[in-house]
Length: 270
Length: 77
Image (cartoon, rainbow over all chains, first blue to last red):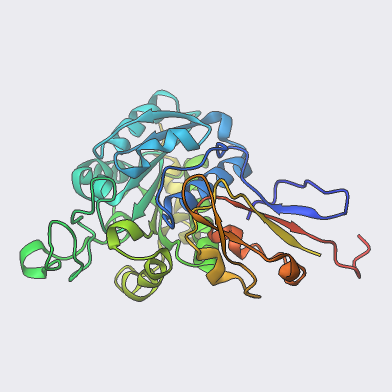
């Protein structure tokens, strides 16, 4: 909820929720019920609340989120096909005073960009990563992703994903949490009001570990893709709660601030 | 009194807001916007039930909802 805005109407009513200032006033190209819109808003609200929007460099990825630069009113670099963490590494090392985040989907981050994300996290780059996990390749028409659930039907596994043939869905938050340079790692969900509010708290922590120089911040957001799931938006939200959250448990997987080990990570800075 | 405003140009008729409203006053209207979506609305007679909780705006993927919260009568500040 955006509380920064304190507009008061002549009647005494207070505007308690509106579009954050750094979210461009433009209808998104996303499908009805797509959670990218919620994730964009959370990112914009946090950049506003942290006061870093003027110093932000966004690194966008490939997929539906490729048009991030149309919606977030920050400077940006386009780095498709999973290379966003590598490009963000260069951006942050060249301009350590800037706030650098990447925004990537599961086809981008967990498949084609697996090497980049693993090594960026392992090096402890001072960047933040927002990872949208909707278990499918959205923009290209609903092909199977590394995160596609067992039994889920997609255009490239029309009989449902098979454990023996395609392997198990990748749990990225758990993997990233165990890498040396990760300062904060959590998984949230965007399927309900409660989970959205919790997800925003996780995102704030992932952003703050960068701002404080502790290391790599990662937050995975379980999201819906009603179009490629062949569902209504309401049914898609129910699927997240019923099928995705049991396989992808929500919660914090690493938090060096809470662990009290953040001091040792600052010493390894640039 | 609290109230919400729905931007009919931005609403895509996904109806997620209708599911989360604790007083269940949001519904799909018969109006169709320029993109062809049937937009969400709150009937005028139901608006006074709005609590200003902002659940609908929180879950709206298109930031189509603004929430105005009225001052509580008992609160002086």
